[in-house]
Image (cartoon, rainbow, N blue to C red; front, side):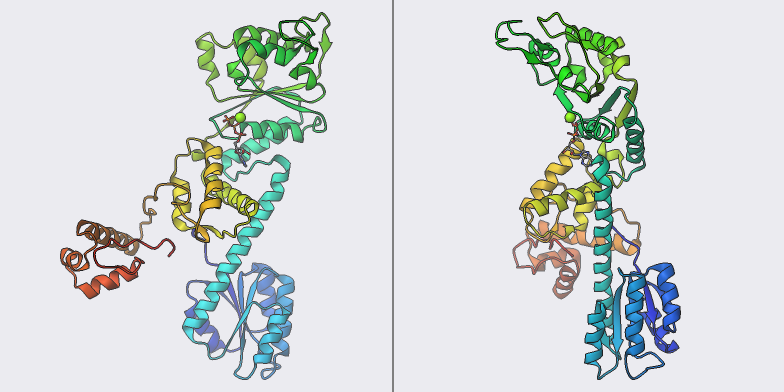
Length: 463
Ligand SMILES: Nc1ncnc2c1ncn2[C@@H]1O[C@H](COP(=O)(O)OP(=O)(O)OP(=O)(O)O)[C@@H](O)[C@H]1O
Ligand SMILES: [Mg+2]
């Protein structure tokens, strides 16, 4: 989840101080302005994440009127910007007025470089978090249409197809591995269609015993068979005016397939044991995670029925082929379940995000939702870790940065040495060819919790 650092607008009339900021904030994209007008132009163009505003600007270098005016105007132009004001020595009151105007934080000149970096870093994190929330809020409102989340090219295509198909009455076959969202897609097509106000009737053809499926689909008259104590309307009939969703369509027995084909061709049903033909206007959607071509080859699925239900196919890609969607969905589910269970969870730790990206997700979105839901209940820290998700620790992020690679190797070697000598620091130091104090320094540097002799230290979870 490495983000580009946000831009920092620096409004400071002193050229020398501006270059100091430039130097101190070399990790950020620094945008310099010498006066309020210039700052406003930059803000309008760049919407920087952060701004540092000197309160003592000319023409009021000893007061704060110009600086406060700048704060107010900048916030009007770019309300999401975190503004940090810089005050002179004796101006606590100015600082609090700036905060009241909407500034995020302040510090006094001359600023200690470390403190400045800390304040700016904290503001940057906050900005990123809020940015992420805004993005999610937007996605959630987009979801109101289909309820289907997905930024990947593959899913964007699916979403476009859904919108297009929803405007027609064409029969659609939705295919995809288990848990990829087939039912969600069927539901979305219905809700986006002109039939939205009418019933959406789903029937899971795999869940109904063979002998009963036909009566379930077509309904039956009283006395049609043993146990038919009253007349019953079938699923097809109850979908009249709306949409019929045949889930697990590959599981329909051959005899019922014949009847279904006839219905699709003639659009009339006869209840089992009845004589009357009833005309039905329904849109038919089907879904399966089976390979229908194979079932046809094996003689278990009728080819003519296949063409009837498959005027157009939507194939849902497995989650592992959807790029960043897994993380996007995970964040969405975490927000949803944290709210549901009344937990304040800030998001995923880095190891969790990489683990989510690397996991094969054989159970697709359903598996992801399940794991995130459990983690939302069980997580102990404010950040959900790979362990909370019960996912394997990810392969160390495949960064090719040499310094990081050396650190990773160093950390692994230390872990190995410690485990071989059962946590005995002196022995581990000996094995590693460093002094004990050096090993202690290394342990601290790598974020191992305070080691006790004779115990393998646990790495701390968040670093
Ligand atoms: N793109 C998505 N955005 C949001 N939620 C999703 C998405 N895809 C699936 N889900 C959620 O994942 C769960 C599984 O989806 P669904 O039941 O539609 O899958 P399915 O393909 O029908 O699975 P199966 O083959 O096992 O019946 C549901 O809770 C659904 O809401
Ligand atoms: Mg399903």
